[in-house]
Image (cartoon, rainbow, N blue to C red):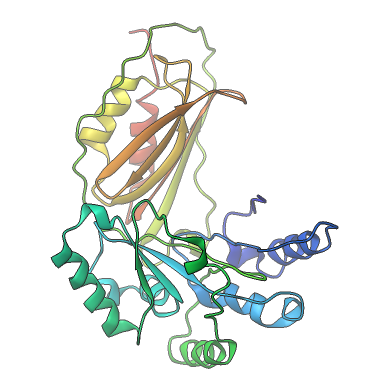
Length: 310
């Protein structure tokens, strides 16, 4: 797995992305697939054309574009957002995820809605995004000619851009479409108590800024501190403070009450905390994605989650 650290692929589409892919292809070992996972706020067109045209066209074959749709939090106002609309329109395979959390009536309503956007869509219902590999790998669904026509038409009509897709001998990328609602049930843990004496050394990093960080009102906020959180204070943040406009969050969390590293995921109104052993320096790193977010308020709220002896 290779992570592109520039934050967004659009900025490095002719730089880091191309260089990284070229280096991977030069490796001695045989590659079966190259998968590029993009941000959830990504338009498939630019990245797809990076692989379907230009220097990489003779080296790789773009197999398909995969879009993951959050069935529980699907936003039927998606026509009002160019990026989300494009993710469905240009997705060769649409994974209708969280199908176990939604009744049949709702699933059919979403599928009917998708059919109005895309002709004969290939929709696969899934739970935890699990599907048989043969249904999404080596399916040969991407059509360069059609995509070129749609790309030219889109850029002429809308003059818009942003990014995402995936590729190689075979490829895939995913997106979650979530409404902006939260109902955080109590999420408790029983951790053995232990204490640390840490010097006050915290950092507050906002996510990189340029137009990607404000796509149709959608922005991301990142926060990092090398001081532990209080589990009680973080729970209070989730239950009472987090903005209703936050629809996705993920991070690595360090709680004073635990020796373990906690992997945090939030999507819509649900969140999870999984734990594992620390292998690097302990810290808290969290990214929140939403619409029209007050970045400073969120950072202040997260700062208030730091453990104190008071």
